[in-house]
Image 1: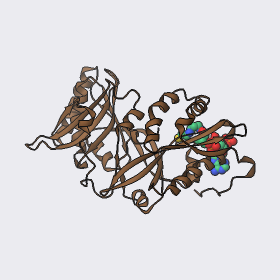
Image 2: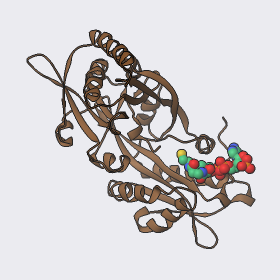
Image 3: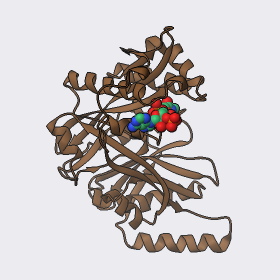
Image 4: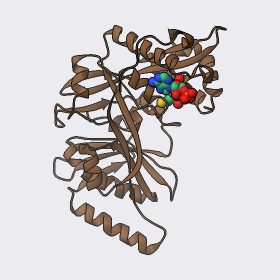
Length: 345
Ligand SMILES: CC(C)(COP(=O)(O)OP(=O)(O)OC[C@H]1O[C@@H](n2cnc3c(N)ncnc32)[C@H](O)[C@@H]1OP(=O)(O)O)[C@@H](O)C(=O)NCCC(=O)NCCS
């Protein structure tokens, strides 16, 4: 795809762009999203934006000739560990252009302005995004390249039909026999579960998010709620070494539970961790457990080994490196250990 020329045809220049502190324009930004069928946005804004701004997040907005706010895009700082160093990323979030201005070029100018300003700051190694089908042509025209996709996987845990439930148990038993037994401790407070720092064990070519508690509050409505449970995983030997953690959001009895956060050091134990986790979650009465991981990655292989079945849903990811370190992270062979909680969808 050829990136589009810098200058938009004069007729569609569109709106005036300014960089702002979104919290100072909260009402106008919320109005834009409410006017375009996004009723959930104001609550999300109140959960996510104040923390994001405190951590360096900013927005770019478009003003029409009447001074009305008619376009928005934000960047949220996201740190990653890569080869023992910290990579500074920026997640593109909440791109919205008012219908009257949806002529491609205005949206492209907005994205390009963000890229230029972030590049000029000199503090960001790469910008990444999970654009939907409408936003992908705009980001591709701004120079973003595909770096892979998140794919959804599901494992059945039990079933109301006795025969099916027995078959599922057998399926899990076979999976368990092929993995290393780990001890799963559940219900630990979040801070205790954050004892695992991204380590070297996963190699210099594995990009690992460094997550803060503000991320969970922003991305999980009502977090920490009674439906959220953290788990820690230890080896069963005398050392009882801590090898992993996971956050699961339960959707009531007989409903699917979702793995929101999982981290494992070394990654070679991920399938063992997921087998132990599935067993604990089954005991809570959940019927299925779902997880999203990067397509064709070590994590995807481990998820399959643990018995999870691939589903068709995918979230494509695009990125734009701004530094040599950023290029290292987007180079072929670099594994991104991203989960849906690390993107904007
Ligand atoms: C995403 C969004 C900002 C894209 O803006 P946009 O490209 O201006 O809007 P559209 O996708 O509607 O496309 C507008 C026009 O540009 C045209 N277009 C697309 N690519 C083009 C290109 N490379 N060159 C010229 N025109 C192009 C399209 O054909 C379309 O015209 P048409 O509807 O008459 O066919 C806008 O669709 C939006 O705000 N959507 C709602 C929120 C949203 O989905 N945000 C993204 C979240 S990830």
